[in-house]
Length: 130
Image (cartoon, rainbow, N blue to C red; front, side):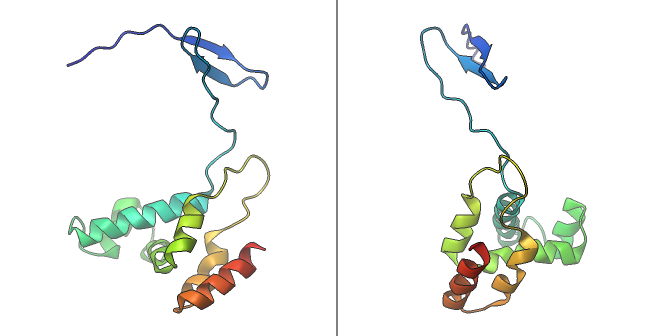
């Protein structure tokens, strides 16, 4: 076991957020806001898909039981894996939500997911976010 000892300086910035800095070193603060829910769902869909592929779970029903959600809800989450790779990337890297409602919701993406052709998905995606 390795033990690391270091002195830290914890202060509050003008917005009241805690800032961690070592002596004489400037540390950037983490941007305010929360990760959009659809970004978290996209990440979960990728992890869940890998669990099914690796045989850690048998099927979506097992995943639903593990996650304590209904099987139809798990299907909605897993359907995010059917999106074009660039749309998945865009969902994963949405900017943090600082105030108000999130701009993109999973429910609003269902018609995009329903489209099989990635080109048409991209068209619907562009319409959905604009």
